[in-house]
Image (cartoon, rainbow, N blue to C red; front, side, top):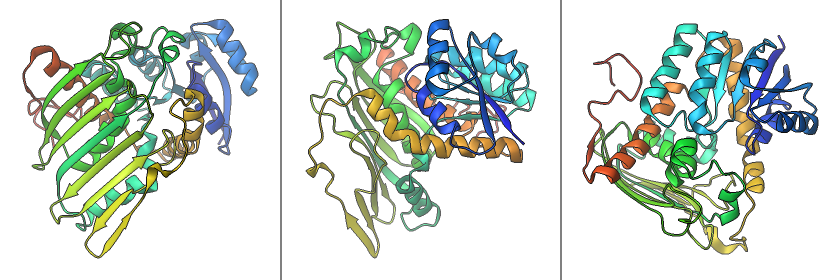
Amino acid sequence: MTLRVGIVGCGKIAGNHARSLQQIPGVEVIACCDTDSDRARNFAAQYGIPAGVAGVESLLALRPDAITVCTPHPVHEEVVVAAAAAGVHVLCEKPIAVELDAADRMVAATEAAGVTFGVVFQRRLWPAAQRIRRAIDDGSLGTPILGEVSVLLHRPPAYYSCDPWRGRWDTDGGGVLMTQAIHQVDLLQWFCGTPVSVTGFIRTHAHGEHIETEDSASAVVAFDTGATATITATTAAAHNLGNRVTVVGATGAVASVLEYPEGQEGVNEIWALPGDTSFGAPFLGDESAHQDIGDINARLTPFHTLQIRDFVDAVREGRDPVVTGRDARASLAIVTAIYESARTGTTVDLTGVDLTGQPEGALS
């Protein structure tokens, strides 16, 4: 059957969704929408989409089978819940929301409506990330005992000034943690298990004239597996050195997935498992420190396509997508706990937080 799909929000990342959807057989992009009607019409013309309308209600009135959500983070809940009420399947950009209660309402609404609900964390589909997950599952890496996230990015002032919603608590929900590092936080918890406590710090060192949220953060996370991990993230680096997630296993094995330059497919820079060892030399190229966000997003398109294709297949097959709303909630729990810890100066206990959206007592 032909799957009729609409795109909600016509900002920068929406281009990835349009390009990806148009590569999938049996998918027809019927419309896009934005609160700025001119931007919706221009986006429709750019990508050959039949209709560009103002607002999600107008798009849902066209009766799509599914939508993808590319709005600013705090708007995700409103759009997903409206789609669920209309019986429309939803694939939402990360983060799922900016508050755990909102994420819970989104999961509840889509499950009650019986619609498919997925969240974009396309880096899980990198072969290098899948390889680490398999090594954990088959025991060759062993139970994770230590993890590390390093996000060392450059963002110029224009990145924030061109999109005034960025870097504000009310419209962005956070800074480097919520917008950039949540991808690596997602990989970390996918590898290491369920988080049980978080201690964190946030600072604004370089972009204080342009944003009210953090441009730098550090945290320590403990997991139910016994693993502990550190998270460091910034958009204040002069050179964009990309993103890395490293895991040490109980066998003594060490594996990492490195994204450099930013947006490039991640590679196993370190792969030191018993009897199977290789190392990469990632920083030998002549990469510019000042990469355009459009170029970064464009490099991610192939893995957007993989995840969107999986979502389309999940709708057709009546199964869960590769990353569900429940899955996406765990990384949000870590990020919001870092903010809470920074605000209160205390360690945040997550053992009473339902990270899966399950009924109380069903936490795995």
